[in-house]
Amino acid sequence: MGGYGLFVWLSFGGSLLALLMLSADSLLARRSLLTQVQAEVARKQRIEQGQIAQKAVQQKSAQQAKEIKVEKVNES
Amino acid sequence: MWKWLHPYAKTERAYQLCQALLPWFAYSALLSFSGGLLWGLAFAPADYQQGDSFRIIYIHVPSAILSMGAYSAMAIAAFIGLVWQVRTAFMAMMALAPIGATITFIALFTGSAWGKPMWGTWWVWDARLTSELILLFLYLGVIFLYKAFDDKRQAGKAAGVMALVGVVNLPVIHYSVQWWNTLHQGATITKFGKPSIAPEMLWPLLLSLLGLALVMGAIFLLRLQNEIIRREIHRPWVVALVNRHIGKAGGQE
Image (cartoon, rainbow over all chains, first blue to last red; front, side, top):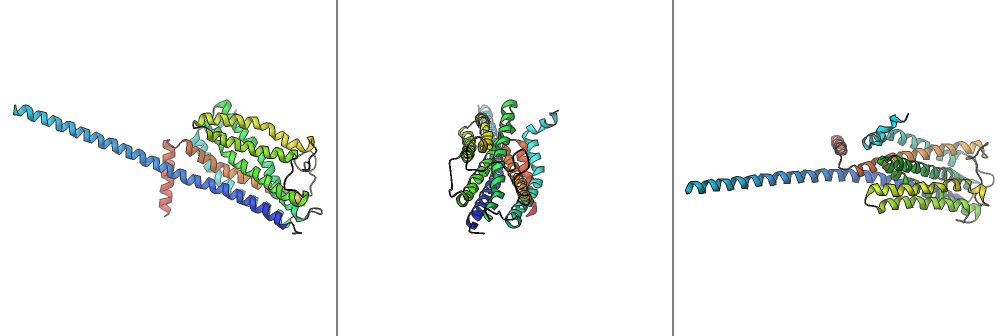
């Protein structure tokens, strides 16, 4: 290329590399965001489950306390 | 008159528009950009003074023109965001910033690689090169200013103001070769009057310009979608979208 080959290929190569890096960053970010959304959904579900379980435990212990009270009244 | 535009201020509609446009931009970008570069590298005639080194023009000029184009787009998005309080506009602004910074870097880098054999130097502090370098700093400034704020509404406003203030650099870059004594040559195509370049060299240049613009457009659509997901991560429509996406991927396997 008349001795200019280095500069021409340096330019084209460097530019394509920069564009590829930009595209890769954009695509990888998309992938990681989709994972994040899934993680958020899973986390919300766990919180909901936890709240339901806690409610059930509370109801059970309230029920048990009631039964003990009734027994005591009956005994006396 | 502009009522039809209003639904696109909503992130969901904007996301869907990006989704619809993406394949068009991606395929046409691939075709035109590679076509233009191939034409310029292999089929355009060599310059009688510069020989084959002038072929750097097929990346340098499109990237330089589009570095300013992307900045204008970013500034318009900033203006819309600031004046009409549209969050999606700030998201668009931040989607454009890294793209513009990359293209400005490419313009400076290829200019440097062209300058070394032709001018005998990688760099000179003339008006055009310096103002283009300032453009790169403006892009980086917008990006990092936005990152500095935790509250993204404030971040958008601050970065938006910076983007708008930087617009003054654009006419400086463009007219630098007229207003000052510069090493960089004058305008060849971005001027009134006939282009001072041979048609066999001009057409691959214009094709490369179109191609690079479409490449930047495609990457912008992708990044805007990312920004929307990032900011709207708790919204039900985003969750539904991701579930559909997972379902499709699972079905394909």
